[in-house]
Length: 397
Image (cartoon, rainbow, N blue to C red):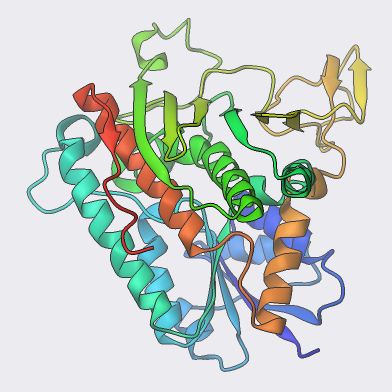
């Protein structure tokens, strides 16, 4: 099997997750030739931490011009995604892109802050045009687009899909959630950088996972199932609190929501609900519940029950990782064990590496990225206008 050579673009928090998973990929000759970040010191720190990363690229152009690089792994803020994707495609590279695919980040003449002042109808229209263009560009090429959506690759979700396919179950209703104690990224406060708030940052995960399961059902039953409509509510909860009451929520949102609930209706009349919010203390909460005509499948992704700890103090635990978004290590806590496996990172990058080596499509592809971001922006439109948003067609799919 030929060697798959990767360049990581973006050396932030998710860069560690990606690299840790790459380090455990098996059966594929894989190398990470570069890491690139506009913050060269941050790139150097990631490179020094992981032996699998061979060096730091001085510029993105250096990555693109290197004929040895097969794949560009984009782990940058959403506002940069499409531009970086297109540059990689023009350089004949395969693309791995973190969620979300893209968003609306503002145009000349928009009143700022855009999240509070630009009509969501304008955002939705521009978003549809952008994702249509993206799909056309990749479909006209022979390059792979691999959507970094870790819910899809969680062993819980993969096993649920296997059982749904085996029994040819009809999914009646799903509920998924990702909730945390607000984002620590400064960019998350601005719609112009993040493309939205909790719904786009967090809700994209359960929405993507539930869409994947619904398509597994459709394939097993020989049916065509699409999204019929979306209804949503969003809110800005923490900004309404006084400084004392919101002291445990570090995010300083300027114009992004911190709560969203989305109801998705499929063309077969079944439903899915996504919940995402930045107001949940106690660590990251990730799950998907699936209720079919003949089963109930409850996927608890995090926290898991593999290891529980009880400490009376935090002495000497400063560098011991317990859980994402969990600051206090005293009392009872559920420790993230084998996080790269349970949250799907290892299976995701194993699939991506094999796809490049074998020239096949990934489980998490451009269609999933497209459908997920379309639902999210339909939800923003629904919440602002107080109405159901119907999907009239499947955009040629």
